[in-house]
Length: 409
Image (cartoon, rainbow, N blue to C red; front, side, top):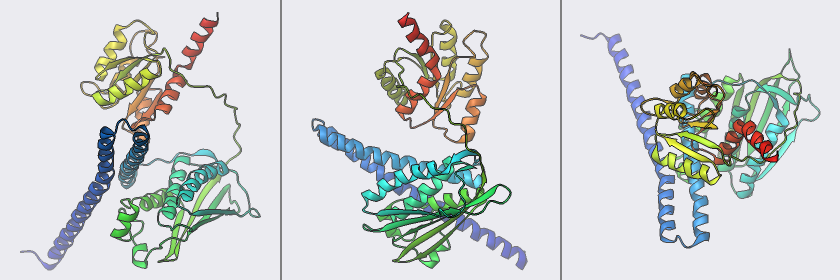
C-alpha cells in the first residue's frame, strides 16, 4: 500500500506527464495548422496556374505568392529545429570580428522595407556622446536572428501609421568588455501582464485571434531569449495593452580591433562547360537540380547514392569531373562515407576534386561533419540556385580560369 509521500510523488509525476502530453498535443495542433495554411495556399495557386497557364501575368503573380508561402514554411521548420537544438544545449556560437554598424545597417535595410509595406515608420537614435566601439567579437548570424525576430514582432503586432523607435549605445569598457544596450519600442497592440510572464516559453502567444490574424507558432521570443542568455546578456520586456511594448536588450561583447580588409574583385559566376557529378537519391530533387544546372551550361551526371558516386568517380579518367555535388542522407552509402572513400582513392584528383554537400542537414554540426569528411563546401536545402552557382564557381574557378587562359593562347 502506498504511503502519503509516495502517493503525492506519483500524483505530481502523473500531473507533469499529463501537462507534457497536453503541450505536445497543442504543439502538434499548432504545427499542423500553421503548415497546412501555406500548403493550402500553394496547392490552390498551383491549380489556378494550371487552369490559367496562358495568363502570364497571373502565373507570375501567383509564383511570387507561392514563394512567400514556401519561405514561411521554411522559417517555421527552421524555428522548430532550432528550438529543439536549444533545449538540447547544442547551438554553438561563433566569435567573429563584427563591424557592428554594418551589421545593424543590414538589419535596418531589411526591416525598414517590411515596415514601409505596412505603413509603419522606423526611427533610430544612437548615443553618439557615449563610448564608441565599432568592432566587436560575436556571432553575426545569431545577432541578426535576435534583432530580426524582435523587429519582426514589432512590425507584425503594430498598426498602420504606427512607429518603432530604437535607442542604442555602449557602456564604458571594463577589461576589454563593453555592454551593448538597445531599447526597441513599438506602438503596437501590447501584451497583458499574465502573458508577459510566459512570453519566453515556446509556443506562447497572447490570444488565439492574434494567432489567426498575425500567424506564427510563438517560437520567436523563446529563441531570442535562448540566444541572448547564451551570449551572457539579458532581455526585459515592458508592455501595456493597446499602447505598445518596449524590448530592453543588453549583450556583453569583447572589443575587437579593426580587421584588415581585402578588396574583393567581384566576377560574374559561371559554371558553363563544367562536368558535374550529382549524387541525389530523391528523383524530384535530382531532376530539379539537373535541369537548373544544365540551364547554366553545365554537363550533369546523376547517380542515386554514395556508392554509385564513388564508382562513377573511379570508373572515369582523372579530372573527368570538375566537382561532385553530394547529398548526405542516401541509401546504400551515405554522402559522408562516399566523400571519405573518394578522398582515400589512389589517384591524382582524389584529394583535389571539389566535393560540395547539398543537404537538408542545415545545422553547424552538420557542416562540421561535412568538412571532417573532406568536403569543401556545404549548401543547405532548399537550395538557393544563385548561391549554388556561386559556390561551384568559387570551388572550380582555378579550372575555369585555366580554360580561359588556354582559349586566349
